[in-house]
Amino acid sequence: MEQLTLNINEKSRTRIIASSPYGIQIELMEYVGSEDVPALMDVSGSLASEYGESARLTKATIRKYFNYPKTLPFVARYRGEIVGYIIGVPLEYFAHDAWARFDQNLGQGNTLYTYAFIMLARYRGNGFAKTLKRVYLNWTKKHGYRYVTGHVIEGIAKNFSPATVIVKRFTNWHGSGKTFEYYRRPIHNASAGRGF
Ligand SMILES: CC(C)(COP(=O)(O)OP(=O)(O)OC[C@H]1O[C@@H](n2cnc3c(N)ncnc32)[C@H](O)[C@@H]1OP(=O)(O)O)[C@@H](O)C(=O)NCCC(=O)NCCS
Image (cartoon, rainbow, N blue to C red; front, side, top):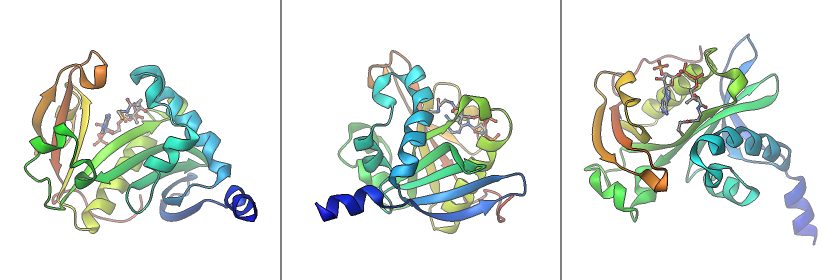
């Protein structure tokens, strides 16, 4: 009983990776305390509107995907509120998923798969997502990864760096009825530097 109480009251633990005078801060979330659970569920809600209800985070799936250090969840916080997140997961985590076997780097320990990238709708198009992604790529580079990969809707990856390649296309990805492309982005040339 005491243990349960302790867990419920446990605070979030995050490591600040970058912050700006404009109030946006990027944090690596090492533990999600109960105070941040509703905000994460809220942010994931807009993923559900595009990818179906299974994409919406629940208390249980938050623990699965925000599971540092097995996963690397970065959140964007604006004026104290979580407004977006991007989650990197080492490719080997998916070793038993059929799609991962198409990646020649599986087993090399050099690839971070981008599991989710999302920003609350009212904060899109204002540079927050760009900042979150840039900090994520820089962190990834500094920690020895050579590639970032992920599944995106067909046509999106051509907007990434010119060195990005499409490894494979997946029709009706996870029953969405849409074609997704699995891209690989080399990060050795990603712009270095700290913060903003
Ligand atoms: C994806 C999302 C976070 C982008 O936010 P935004 O404010 O519209 O951002 P921008 O259009 O300015 O794009 C920011 C950067 O992210 C990149 N980007 C866009 N969609 C992306 C995706 N699915 N995966 C990776 N990068 C993506 C853009 O190319 C841009 O890169 P750049 O900084 O190198 O130019 C936002 O549209 C969103 O939350 N969408 C709903 C969730 C979703 O579909 N996520 C993708 C699948 S998990």
